[in-house]
Length: 602
Image 1 (cartoon, rainbow, N blue to C red):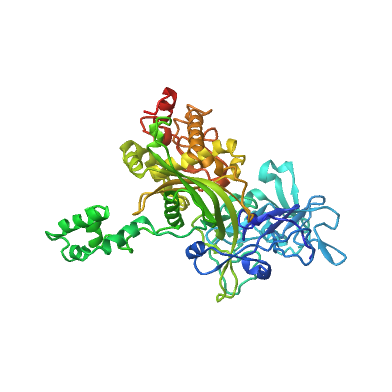
Image 2 (cartoon, one colour):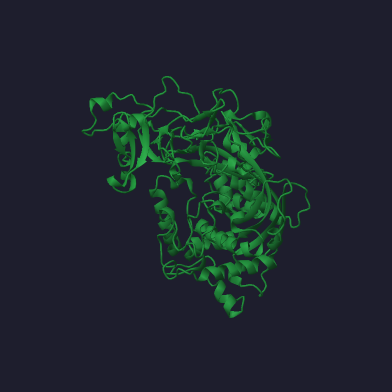
C-alpha cells in the first residue's frame, strides 16, 4: 500500500495521538496501534527510575524519529487506516476499498472523486473496543415494514451510496445509506439511539482495529454509534515525573531519629504506663519533636500498612524542600534550584509574606512524560495498556518523551494554611466541589479538592496568566504542578510553574529569571489584582456552578482559566473566593490587596 508521509512532533506520540487515538492526516483518518508495532531498533530508551517504579515492570521508549526528509528507509511509526468505510464525494459510492493505480492503492474512487471517511464508528460501552460499522449489514436491517425478502437476501455489496436528501427532513434524517440493488434506504437518525446496533444484531468483535480477530474472544458488551472525532472515544491516561534525586520525607527522617534514641525502647516497653509520658518528653525535648510523636511511634502509629500511599509528588516535595534550605545551588545535575527566603520587611504586605515563606528558582529540571494506556466511552470502561504485544515475557513498552526546562517554585506556610482551611466557612465552600467530585463516575481521577488544593491551584492559574506577559512564553507553554495534600504525615503546600522543551539544552531562561523574590512578589500581587475584578462579575464571583461538570466555583475564562494543556485537572477545581475571599468566605490571601492599596505592610 502506498505510504502516507506525515510528520508528527515527538510529544504528539504521547499526547494527543498516543496508541488508540484517531488521527486525521491529509484528509484521511488513521488510528495509532500499540507499541508492539514499533521498530524498537530506532526507539531510544529513556531512563527515569521514579516513573518506572510507579508504572511497574516495563521500559520507557521514545518514538522512532528522523531528521531531514523522510525516505523509504527512514524510521517511522505505523498507522492503521480507520474507519475502512469511506464514501466518494463525487458519486457518493460507499465502499471499503480504494482505487488501484499501477498496482498501488490510492485514496480515489473509480470516478476520480476523493474518498471521505465515514463520520460514525462503533465503540464498546465497557470493553474500550472500537470498530467499523458494517454499513451494508446495517442498511439491510431494522424493524421497518420495508424489510422485505428482497432486502433481507440482497447481495449487492458494491451498490451502496451515502446520500443527502432534504426531502426527508434536516439533520441526521436527511443523511441516508441507500442500496441501489434492493432500493433499501435507511437514515442515520435510526443509528444513534443507544440500543440501535444491538437490535440490528451487530456485535462487538472484542478487538482494536489493528488487531487480528481472536477465535473464541467474545465481548458481551453492547456497541454504540458515535461520531468519529468525539472526545469520549479516547480517554488517555498519562503520567509524568520530574527527574530528581529521591529524598526521604521529613516525617520518615524524624521517625528514624526517634527510633534510634537511647530511651525509645523504654517508651515502647512501658507504653501506656506511668513512665512512658515522662521519657517521651525527654526524647522530644532533645530531638525537637513533640511527645505525642514519640508516643504515637511507640504505639505503632506509623504502620506503613495504614499510611496513605505516597505518589510521585511526595518525593518531589521532599527534594524541593532540601533545595530550598540549601540556598544557592552550584550542582551540575538535571535538577538545579536556588532557594530564597521571602522577605518579611514592611515593603511587602504581611498578609502575603506571612503565608508565602520561600521561593525556588528552578534553573534546570528534567521531566519525563509517559503514556500508560487508554479507555473508551467512559472512565469506568476496561483499561487498554499501551503495549498489547502477544509475548507476555517481554517487558511492555511505554511511549515516553523527556523534556528539559526551567521554573519557579513557591512554598506556603503550613501552619497558616492549616489554620485557614480549618475554618467552617472555608470547609463548607470546598465541600461543594468535594461532593460533586464524589458523585461523578470519572472525576475520581482528579485530586481531592480540599481547601488548600483549590486555593493553591487557583493561585497557580492566576500567576500563569500574569507570567505570560512578563516571561516571554505564552500561557500554553507554561505548566503547573500542585503540591497540596493534608492527608499524609508530610503535608504539602506548594506550587511549581515551569516550562519545558524537548531539547537537551532546555529553554532560554525567561521564566527562571523572574523567580527572585523582588520580581515574583510584584507579579503575584499583579495577578491577584487582575483576579479581583472579572469581566463577568458579578455573575462569576457569585457563581458556584461553572466549568465542566460544574467543577468550578467562582472561576471563568475572564479571570482564572488557562490553556487546558497547562492545567493538571483540565481547568477544573478552581475558585477565586478561596483565594481573595467573598460571600462571607475568608480567602487564603484575604486582605493582601487591601494592604497594598493602603500602602502598608501591616
